[in-house]
Image 1 (tube, rainbow, N blue to C red):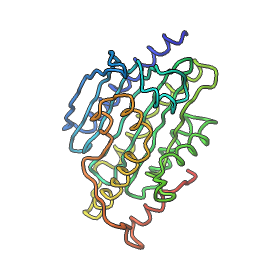
Image 2: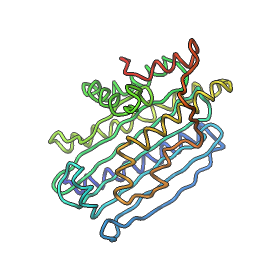
Image 3: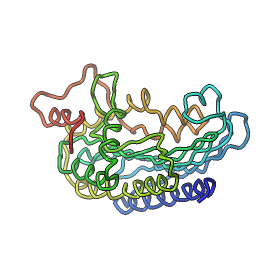
Length: 295
């Protein structure tokens, strides 16, 4: 398969995945309201540069969520181009990016993205999926990781470590955003078709990795204390996304659509000076999971 054909196939694949995920969310949350935007962008030279489909959600189960696809191309800022690992100041990128923030603290937040990038003579894949729970239900953490372990095979341990290292609020020491998952970047083994099939296979495991957890926990009761802890941890989520997330920087530096980029932020969060959960509480136990663990 030629590279241009592969790029078109990948773009179509992420759009189909966007629709499948949307239907699964609607199945679980019949009150879900979707706002869809089809947007266009200009490249760095003010020429047409592609666009995307943003789907923003609000519902009873899913407090706020975004499931977005994009296919962008054209000139990029030469200074930013130097930070990428391709060559030249033209690029093409397509992918899906999603974030789901449930209302029930017993249901974890989830993030995933799967993308393909072509810059000059180089191209690569990137992405992954990670879970941010707010209640220490270890069986759910093991389930999430086991799905990705089976999907990634021998690559799982390396992808897990990359995820643990990356989704970390390093300005606070070793404090992960959640309990990890898998993450990979600049993937190019030299076998383009094999890389494509692997990334496609990984992306197709997202629904299996997350929605069974949602379905299991969505009707469980929660307390005001549970919600308070969730909102404080969402504050840490905001810290990571604004300070460290490379996807946020990439979108802003390539003239992406600002609201589509910042849709990853939760509708509600809290910040308290020197916040720590109460000693001996279930929340302190959950806090202990925000470090690398073997699942």
